[in-house]
Image 1 (cartoon, rainbow, N blue to C red):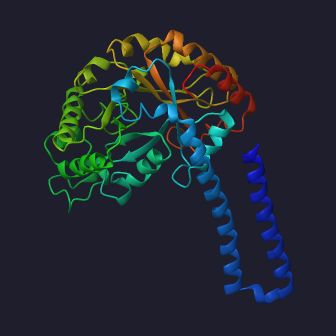
Image 2: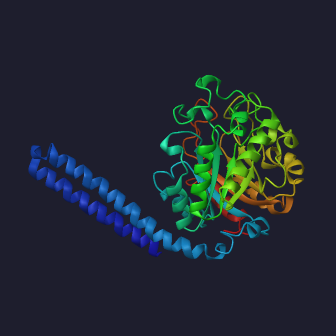
Image 3: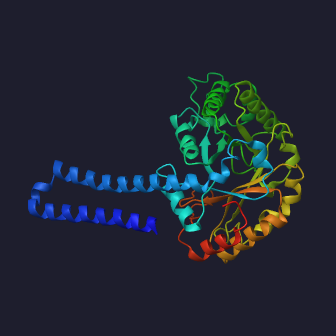
Length: 384
C-alpha cells in the first residue's frame, strides 16, 4: 500500500510540474523556442529520471530485506550447489538502461530474484571488458550475477593482439585452438583480475551451446570437440593462476544436439550444468508448441548423470501456438519433483529478441496476467 501511495505521489508531482510547464509555455508563446525549449525538455527528462531513481532506491531497501535469507548463500558455492529448493533468477534486455524492468517483473511476480543474468562478448571494445559496473550493481542490490561469456573472436584488434589472424573472416576457423595457444592471454587475464578484485561469487557461463553447428562461431562447424575442452580448461586454469577463485563455472551445451560427453571438460573444471529451455511455439517453420518436458525433460538423464547442480539459464515461452500460462504452470509445478538436480531457473524476459528469427520476438510476461498468476501459483515452494 505504501508503494502505491508513494508512486501515486510522485506521479501527481510530475503531472503538476508538467501542467505548470504547459501554462508557462502558453504565456511566453514563441519565446519558448531555442534555449528555453531545450531547458524545458531537459526538465521533463529530469523528472522522469528522478522518479525512476527514487523508486529504485526505495525498492533497493525492500530488496535487501527480502533477500536476507539469501545472504548465507551469496558467497558460499557449496551451499548454493546443495540447496534443497529452486532459486529464481532473471535476464532482462532493458537492464542496461535501468533496473526498473527487473523491479517491475519482481513486483508482478511478488518476488525478489537472487540471481540476475547478463551477456558479455569477448573483444577489444570498451563494452567487452569485465562488466564491473553491472556486476557491482547486481551485488549491491543483494543478488548474484550470472555472466554468459561469449568468445566472439572477430571483435579483437590486431594492434593489441598481434598473433591473431588479421583476416576477420578466417579468425573463427579453429579459433578455439588460438585461445589455447595463448593469443588472448592478456584479455583473459584482465577479466580474471577484475573478477578477483570484484570479490563476490559470480557464475560464468563460458562458450554456451558449443555443440550447436549453426548458431555460434565457437561451434563444431569451426572447431573439434577436443578443441573446446582444451580451451575451456585453459581459461579456467588462467583464472586460477590469477587468483580468481570466486567463479562458479557453468558448462552449457545445447540439449538438442547432444554429444555431451565429447564436450565435457571434466568434473574438476565444471561446477554447474546450464542449459536453455525456450518454447518458440509456432513462430517459425522449424518450431512447434513443445512442453518443458519435451524440450528439457528428454535430455535430463544425460545432463544429470554428471552429478552437478543444474541451472536453467534461459527459461521462457512465447504465446504463439498454445496456452502460455499452462506451459509455465506445468513446467514449474512439476520441476522440483521430476528434476531434483535443478537448483536454479532464470527467466528469459526479453522484450526485443533478434537473435533467432528475422523478426523481433517478445518474451515479456510482466503484463500477461494469466501467466503471472500461473507462475506465482506454481513457485510457492521455491526460494522466492
